[in-house]
Length: 246
Image (cartoon, rainbow, N blue to C red; front, side, top):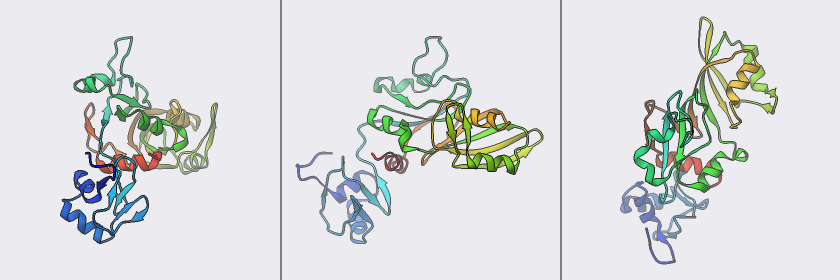
């Protein structure tokens, strides 16, 4: 998308992003539903820099034109979260082989015995911000743990506990179901230390039997089958950019 140095007309940017046709985008602007850098735009023909200006429609961020690839993969259990394994084990690269020329890499890690959502990209700046602990991007898991988890344990987790490498405090812990000698929990945590969910549950006496990551920020696993992947949606990418200051 190229225009003179003065920028690109706002309605053209919205149309290119798939928000609406140019004419319908003009209506959105006239209704005061479009913001550029936190300023409501009412003038038609406003020129913007789609690479750097923060544009929102009804409060939702519109990411810049995509020069990079952003994928969500449902990593199977037993697959190594790396692009190359010297031991010859299956890696996430095996599931995106058709994109090998794009040199994608995974953002963060998942334990080999943990399944679920993994983001892959070839955008180094985005990956660095998404993985950096200072942004505290929330990650949501479904954990099957040993034993019946009681309210006292939930309160302890919500208050925070100490591990050998520092304190941890999940932002949300909910019981999904309890059956016999196991409990299904939904846990949201805003950090990515090694095996943090497993170590946290071990510390409160409920070791994890099975673990799946179902969300990273606004991105949800949804109906994505194990071993399958998809492109991030415009809304998901915009939400991640908001969380990471991109």
